[in-house]
Image (cartoon, rainbow, N blue to C red; front, side):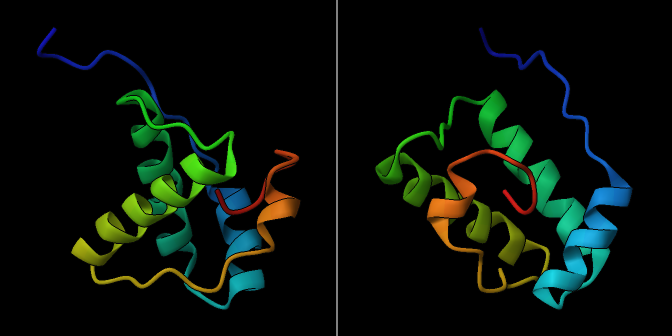
Length: 87
């Protein structure tokens, strides 16, 4: 099992509207979605607060490779309801 099989589908429209809430470029928001989805594909989970912290750190690590710093995220409690917005 040395290969990865899956898809990551992201919305440029959602990234554009959400990016304004965090005062950063839509391209960075879209990249965050791709990173977030890819982390799920390789086994990361963000359903518990502890796992969410680990996943957020990985997102920040990979965004940094592209020269982006994660903006202040929405309150984690709000994100836990999985209603959308930044991962």
